[in-house]
Length: 338
Image (cartoon, rainbow, N blue to C red):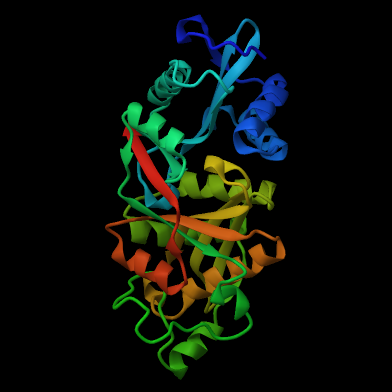
């Protein structure tokens, strides 16, 4: 790899290829301090399997790769209605920072986003990564109106008490939860909670999930939900999708994605991107049952943390997450209009 800094004008921006794997892994290992080959290889394979959903670019100089940027198209995560492009991984060979190469990679990504109908580009970054924050600021990113929350699986009451009733201590729960379940205030609610059967989501659940989601969001997101379910059925190690059953029907659902490496993470993290409960079954512990089963599954898989992004305007959802033990993450959410 070249060690002499190069000007952005002498760099070629092209599509990232599977043959670039070793070079990307090497650059990323220098930045992160350890190799993330498995994660990067999965991202390249995902792009090969579903090209329309992935934008992956390489910066090349004299035949050598000196930088890369990986992103994926998202449509529906966290209740959003319009498609957005999420930056997953970006890196430059040491010595080439602050010379415009990263900006050229981003401009290629922005052009791709415009062609594919994305209205925003989003990403996350730890508040401690000053170089990344400066790069995002220089590109015109701003803080997104979302709070990133997380919970440690092993430390969570949802995991430790997964065989028993789950209750929110007095004074900790939100005053009013709409669609996501709430603390069990009496024996009747506790009994109803135990009547919820949480299972792995199957194709047979899709119609009921689309119906519940339409009531909660006001739009039909069958394509998005179907795609996430198909992804889960193809690779249970990447996606965890659960459905809550009661009275012979689906009354709630939760979808999460487990991976290592997104946005500079150094440990396995599950990201909850879709959660919903039938309004007719609100306040019966359905949301807590789904979350408890997720934590139990993740504990068995040795996934150490759970994360989600909550709109600041959704007080009910934020209150539910706090009641489940989630707290502020050190990561911040950023966005930029395409």
